[in-house]
Image (tube, rainbow, N blue to C red; front, top):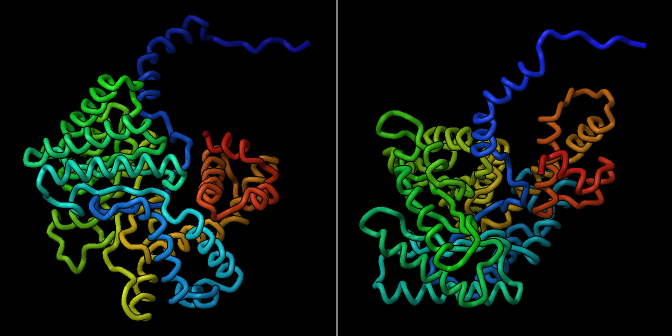
Length: 420
């Protein structure tokens, strides 16, 4: 009979270390809960409040399909524009067309900020109420996108009261109409100091208490579009402080391409998501958000696919390349500003997911089966591999049957491996 292994430390020693680290354990759990394990939209579409109607999503889908039909009517044409080869081009083209018919917009933000501007109070009041009524109606009849909400004016003194009033009117009207939609999304722009994020968090809590909502029901996105939101006046990184100040209510960080670029003094011709200044800001955002459960969104390009065919194709190639670049850098969401950008948004996401399907599935299957392969994977890479497949499933790039056929894993298995 084997003898028990000898040790020197007693149970009391081990318990003492545990007691000494109990506060650290609690702090780690609070600050770094990990990814929420839910679907993330691949994009956010911004529409000025005065242009938003119940037909907005349908119209964006129709206009996107029209652009695809005119400028890339078949897989060969799309492949020639974007550099996709035969089989992949056909898969991507078919899935993009289906997506534009079925769910052209995943996340819609009704804009009361720069895209709306300063209006008389009575006009913005009416627009806030109309937006809420329309969202309620769309939610009731099933035409709302999975995520929908508003971008309010910021917490700076000149527009603070107006922004708070619009938010209050919008949320109150939603409650009067039957309740907050499950995919409610609120964006706070031009955040400069942590105190502004803290004020927004306090505002959400006060509204919940006054309306009888569960604590934490209302969360918000922080828009990173000022230099001070990256580097504070004392020389320290601000993004972690913004997340902390939001007190668990920050759902995402959205990079604002043009305001941030302008704040850095970059000339208009060079303001783009792939500028070195943008890469620096987004790298800081990525590190600060890692493990917190706060998600990331890239910004947009203002080069729109409009005009003659050559101009559309050039803009599509630019947009497609920027989206692919973001995906490779771990930014799985971005802004789209025009319906004709939707074909290349989904083409980029779908090509990204489908190009790596066989390799990711093969590695994950080998990891689960504990068989040796060309790549030595461990739990961290298994999480990344399963997360990659889940993103493809969530947006329609992949089908459950083809993933299961390659991995032998059902959706719950993938969720468990991804830590969801």
